[in-house]
Amino acid sequence: MLVIYRPQQGKTFSAHSNWLKAQAKVHAIQLYWYETCGHFETDLERIKGLIPNYTQIIVLGGDGTLNLAANAIGGTQVVLSLLPCGTGNDFSRQFGYSMQQWRNTIFAGKVRSVDVGLIGNRYFINMAGVGFNAEVVSAMGGKKPFGKLSYTIAGIMKLASYRGTPIEFEYGQRATMMCLFSNGRHFAAGLTPAPDAQLDDGVLQVITIPAVVWYKRLWCFALMLFGQHTRLPWVSVRRCQQLEIKTSGLAIEADGDLIATTPALIKCKAALLQFKVLN
Image: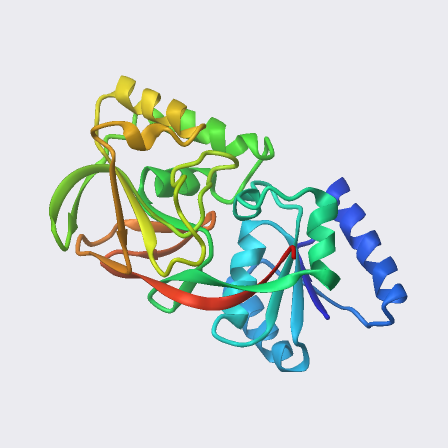
């Protein structure tokens, strides 16, 4: 098995890696440990070169490392497993598994075909978006000094000052605070912007929040903690297989990283990934 991980010293990472090494001896299998260098294209090329030698890979990490793995194996029959130990762990959150349950998926779980999103030639497994979320990720600059609270703190600092931007969609132009393309349900280390999103329904849930006044923004994000913001009359929820953004020069954030700029066509690629889940 191929194990992909980012260099880190967290307790959860150490616990998972020690458990995995012990289980490899029990099952008499050899593990190859690939430590990412932090440059997406370099890591992607190297992992793709390793993939032909393996039928299953294990990600020890969070959404960013999972995104890298999905881009390396998407469309193949290589099975993806996850032991969550990242900062946000938003993709894993929707399963509701305990640490032991995630471990149970590695050797005894079943394979589930799940969708991924596609922007240009880059897949995303959980969520992408333009507007406020991309501005927050840009402001963070890849740094997370407060752990998972880094997203919350950076978001609060931007919430009142961000004015939104006019975005031209294929169905018209709107003054928009944020537009999310959701394969999974959670982002920003625990918010639930897409409570009804499904990983295997062949569509993305598109959540659009207009550039409303500050107190409506605050109320919207407070309700997003519980997935109740979609009841607000100014929040738009659509389901589609693809969506085009015609506006130029907007940063696109996906799975916690800035990956592209608009204009862009965002697509759902159904059942492209084989993912290990509980029986």
